[in-house]
Amino acid sequence: MARLTNLPDDVLFIIADLLRHRGMTIDEAFAQAHKDNSIDSDRAISRYLRRGFDDLLNLSLAHDRLRCVMRRAWSTMSFTGPNATRKMVSCLKFVDKHPEAQGWVRTVYLNLEQSQRTNQRFDKTSVAFLRQQASKKGVKWSEDAWLSNDQGWHGHRIETITLLLLANLPNLQELGLALSGGEPMTSPHYDLGQNSDLNLLALCPQLSSLALRPVKGTIPVFKGLYSIIGKIGAEPTHLYIDNLYPVRMGLESAGLCSTLFEKVTHLTIAGTISGSAYRDAFDSVMADCGPLLDFRLIGHLSDSDTDPGYGIDPLHALEGLRQGERHTKTLRSLVIDLSDNWVSYGKSGIDYLDEFENLENLWIDGDSLCRGEFEITTVHEKGEPLYDYYEDALWSLPTSLKRICFTHELELFKDVLLDFAGHLDYLTNLERVYLKDLDNHKGIVEDLKEEFEKFGVPGTITDVDAVLWEAS
Image (cartoon, rainbow, N blue to C red):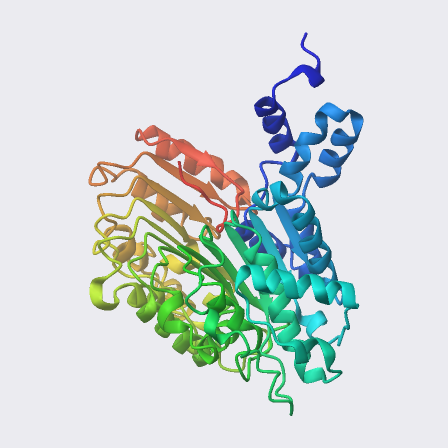
């Protein structure tokens, strides 16, 4: 048997990837932290992104030959807390001393909110190093920002350090940011405008995935750290937004809405979706987006919302996708999972899907299939067939569909799905049906799986999160 130390690097890297549990994308880390309802989301996100790091470190220390696996460990970095900027400067010094490490990093998560509130000073050696880096990377340098005690310059220092870090990671593919617009300050320097001429520089040429969330739900009052997104020349194809309205406001204040969404093909909107402000923000985003291949809406209501009836319900989501018919021809995957009690407010479920003629993958929760609790209650009172209230959606599925996932409250429309299983002839391309119901009342998931398979469609019972679902 070959010894571990005799294995080629490629095989060691495969082992390292397994120890990292394949690694976790920035979208998945955001979604998992949200799913766990973690009070300390930053710590949760960092923990998920750094899964397996300690295992790799221990492996690398076992033998000099195994040190190479650490390049897999450093593929992901996270900077949060009051000392985030100091850690970023330390990282900059490390990659400057070991330039080969610059290419190892693929994913970075930043929450600079606490650093933003901590007026940190840097020693002369660090300032000289940063000045040199700025000259090399073309980042505008202001000596006053590093000499002055004015808190107003602190935002500029954060921005400069962030830009320098990202500019030294040429293979960066995924960037997660927790941002706030902050509170306006009297200093004219605080608006982070000192590097405004960087808008046209592509500091992160490989960046394809961007995940954004506000800090503690704050509503930006001016562009603040959102300006960094424009200054790195971000043109993501994959965009994840947690808590749409504050993020949209931050992007708008930084003048990014007209450009950031242009090349987005995969859009996920998660978090709070209730209230007219979120509805308006959604409409604006859909108008700015280019043709989408993948759209996911995984939302919940805010407990403090006094008027949840004007949020983003399933029907409104479809109406947004129909804007200008840009998405109806291109959309391949549609995920709508609003199973967190929105139906109790009488929201509107989806109607017709046949316009999405190239749709291949559909994830839909039981609540989003029906048309509101009021109508369902009325149906039960009148003794009418419940099937009619799911008919629009189920009998307008595009024939291009290959995979469907039904989830949540399967008991409510069990009879509907049993009938549907026997009338799938028109879905000639259907390859598989996925079923998810964590309650699984009276073994309903197994019963439905058996019924679909009886009519020739393989069934799969899954517990995967909607954000993480990869139909295959």
